[in-house]
Length: 318
Image 1: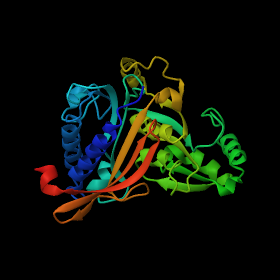
Image 2: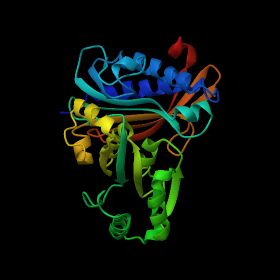
Image 3: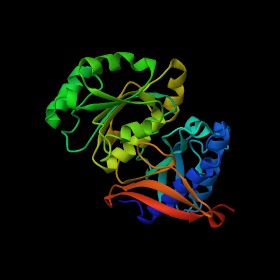
């Protein structure tokens, strides 16, 4: 089965309005207000859609409302059963401090087809399309993965670009990439866009690797799945996280998940820029209107588009 194609335009509305809601707080220093601005408008739009949706990747547990929490039901209660993964504002600090690379993002799949990852760390490796299935593996050394990728792409290691979060936990990986003379594209936050960069035609990135957020891993996998990209992940859990992971259905918490285990069947993905960055331009104020830049994908319909929509403020947000 496929998701109803009409959902894509409605999901685009949800990310665009969420992005606009948070854009009022760019440079405000108030990341919580920026997040709430996105959450409130995304929830409002999702509840207009004729679907029986449930949030499987969200912003926290039920008692953390008004966030869009894991297990929250969204939609009108009619139509298809849909699993929703979302982050109304990826990069709350970026908006608060007027820094680049913040956006509103969500993914949708049929019920039971998205991995319910807890809000913990996740080890990840992602790479682009038209490469052998399961080419790279988290249990390989960095050198082995780089050489495998180099051979498959018919490029020398020094012609490859790796994207990685600039964190002390990645110092050993960075040292090894430097030894292999791989180019490095550092990001300070926002590892959804980092992982997606391996399939972005405007990006030089060949491989994304390191440890980031679990929910962000599922969101990135949804986008990669639409365009033939590949990804392998493994949860990184503290002792206190294990019980929470089990409640979400994760029985083997040391398991490696390939992309086809994280995202199954048809999937849609939408991301709208708040502040401009590598993936998308941010919200542009046009007086009585605003301009939203969105990256939208629908796997089964083979939709892959970057679009610019203009909305009238008073119609959209009174």
